[in-house]
Image (cartoon, rainbow, N blue to C red; front, side):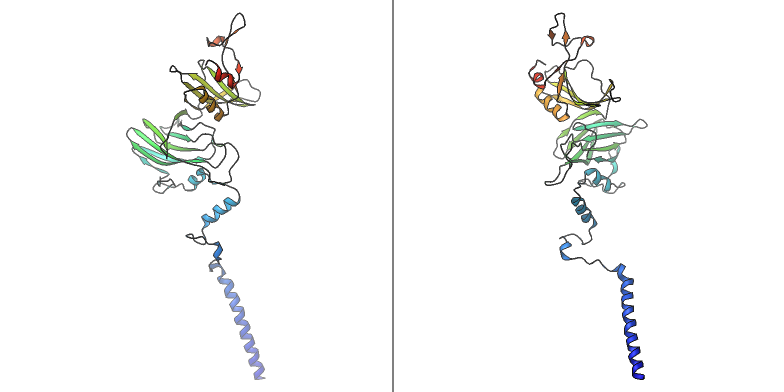
Length: 323
C-alpha cells in the first residue's frame, strides 16, 4: 500500500512540474527575444531594422519613395535635422530671415524649370516654389539642401535626384517641386543646383497671363478644356523671348479661356523655341497674325491689333518663315 502511495505521489509531482513548466513558458513568451535566422541579417544592420523592412516592402510593392515623402517624414522642429545633405533644419534663421521648408512633391503643376514667387496677402511672408521642370517618368525629386545669406544675396541650393537604375517608376509626366517659406523677400535671390547651375526666376506662381499684341507667333497643342501654348516675341537684338502658358476654359464648350503663366525665358534661335515648345507639349500648330488687304493677298506684316486675324501654319513653316 505504501509503495503504491509513493508511486502515486511521484507521478503527481512529475505531472505538476510539467504543467508548471509549460505555464511558465506561456507567461514569459512576450519578453523572449525574436529568433532570427542568419540569412535574414545584413552586415552592419540590426536584426530588427524596421526602416530596412519598410524599404523592402516598398520595393516589393513597386513603390518609389519621393523626396517629398522623405522630407515630410524627416521634418523636425528647430534644432533637429530635416534630412538635408548638410543637416539643414526644417526651420531656422539665415541672416535676418526666418525660413521654413514647406516640403516637396514628386509631381506638382507642370511648371518650367526654375523658381516662382508666391506671396502672402496677410503678412510679408513669401514662398518660393522651386521646380525641376517636366520629366518623362516618375522617380525624380528635388529638395533644398543648403541656404546661405551674404548681404544682399540669399543663395538657396537644391539637390535634384534621379531614379536609380532598374527602379520601378510611374510611366507618366511628372514635375518635381519643393517649397520654402521666408519671413520676407530678400533683395536678391539665387537658386543653384548642387553642381552650381543657376535656375532662372520664372515669375509669380500660377500667375494669370495676358499676351498683349506684340507677339510674333504662338505655338499650341491640346484638346478639350486644356491647351498648352508658347507665345513668341522678338527682341531688338534678334533673339526671342518665349512665355509658356496653360490655357483652360471656364467650362466645357466655353469660348473664354484663362491663361496661366508656366514659365518664360529667352532663346537665340527659332529651333530653340521649337525644342522648348516640345518640352511644354505645345509644339502642334503655329498661330501668327496677318493682314488681309484689298486683293485678298496675305501680307505677313504685323499691324495694329484691331486688324489682326488668325492663321495657322506648320512648325516647319515657322522655322522657314521670316519671323
